[in-house]
Length: 164
Image (cartoon, rainbow, N blue to C red):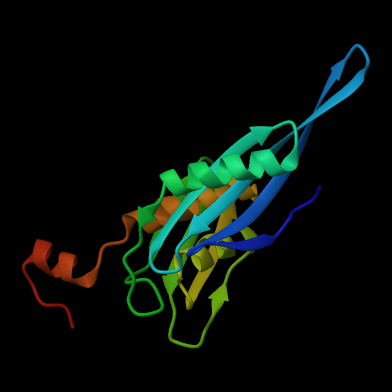
């Protein structure tokens, strides 16, 4: 089960299945398969989270991951349809550079980073990933980068200056 890109609407939440992995355990009677799913959940309005679920069949593991994603949601500060400033997110060997873009640019990103940005409601952004190309690590690095973002008002208040 290669990369599965799936999107569903649950109430007001968007859900993207980023990756489904199949694991085989060799037992006396043959192989026993289990599955692990990575799901990104967002409201499309500045909140996004990720979840990782494991089960013996695909639907239960996707459901577990979705529930975990709903519990792990974080707030993403946004400037209209993009992010307030450039940021680098890191997790393990994965590094993701997130750069704000002008309106109409769209989401320029790979599958894993795109899932996070679209779930968060970011419509214009430039991204580049370095190091690992593991979708699980890229999702975690992207969310780590989004957690570092600060809105313009907060930066002005902390610095005691007015930014143009």
